[in-house]
Length: 477
Image 1 (cartoon, rainbow, N blue to C red):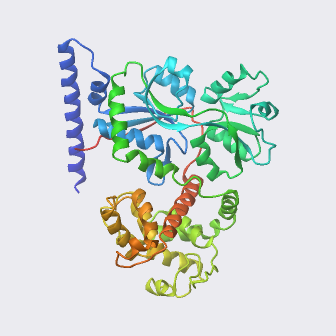
Image 2: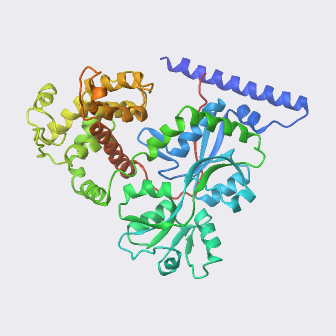
Image 3: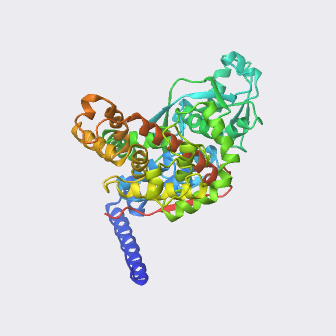
């Protein structure tokens, strides 16, 4: 493409947007009224979102911006037909101050709708139910209820809903004691607990679920609250935006977008126990550094994500180059003789050959996935086919269509694949019986390992004294 033409096209597009905004402003002035919040957002062409860094909220991943709240905010902006400006602040208190001062249109930062906050702020629709949980290091003599909470060191983040809840409980339990900090976020305090630098803290159940994968030493002592709702906060004058937000959330629920997003970020939280995760973290320190450059090189050569390929290698062999299964597959990527020959691997026990051969084979399988399968689901389908074979995957897709399910989403396919072990289903498909639960578990374990590796390599929990601004343009319609 001609760079000058591209640049001229961008200038023309910006000029048109500017002219439209000017014309819209002139119209409002002529009407003698102020624009509504929605008109204002569409006039400036962007939704301004206040948020913070967290694995459950927003971070920069290997493919760019990521996080549950970020994805939702981006989809809502697309629904409105505008771009999104992400303004990353350093704490909950700065986000609440920012939205109060009109520095953003919405605050999307895993914020609990508490009674106290509801008296001060304008909330949108509820989108996630959580419980506040007391979390300690597994070596601590953990409290079983509120009566024992005063016997441990408890640290929570300033301006958090946890501090508010503890203050409420202290009225009936005057023995309760805790410390608050403005130096650490909730996620950072969880890391302090995992490192035994702090005994216990309080965090929402969704935050705990994610962080237990990264820090298996964390253990939930008990729930501090009943279910509470997470919700976005709107700037005071944006009451008219509540209706648009409610309609969008309803459409997300109706068409499965909410379930798919939940599955992506939280669908893999409970498939490991403490031993599984402890062994994995041990091998991340001792084994992965030995083979990291080969996973990086093989991933780059075959246009695959490094973290996914490394996670697959762990699922196959625990990064053991001499691994062998009862069925005769061998090496880090556990290749069969037939597969090894097809991808040019002469020695399956040679770690470098195995990694490059496995990557080459996964890349070939990925090319066999229909183009109708989009996004992250393409990799999940390819991993399932790597495990169970493309033939069985195609059978499952046909079966999904017959059952009225979407054959192009992993969320639907992971419920259909296990049916291939039932006679009434496998006798109706071309390739017959398959242990369909196996590829589902295979994929979900790899995705969970991938997320942990991704956290290590790409996500850094840090405080920043400056506002970080990321602009994503409006969708072209």
